[in-house]
Length: 168
Image (cartoon, rainbow, N blue to C red; front, side):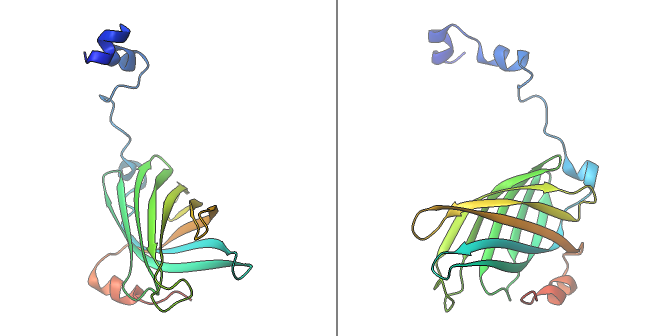
């Protein structure tokens, strides 16, 4: 027991076990149910540009690599901006963080944005649909829709070469 447990008269390990929340139960392995989520995915997120008074969309081809319940996504080099995601899968729920460095010569002049993301994996494991949250340039909390759609289950050089372009 640690000192807080002694001071408060509780046994943390016993309380967690009795509640079924002890760490001896592993998280479900998504690959066991859905197969590997590694591949090239089309990433599309929507955002509102207050300075342009428009709803816009940003598209990237991203490589997703899976290790256990962890997903790592990186935009392919030809993307106009560099985007990355670190996510975890628990059943159909995909949760994580994203970061994007905008195009240096583009409208946002190389600004870096980041935030959280939550998605649901469809039963075919070919699409994730959800929403992002993050801060805008005026520090307002912004949100929008985000989808990832599998375009190629291969992550080899040929697949990367085939998809290393700005999506239409």
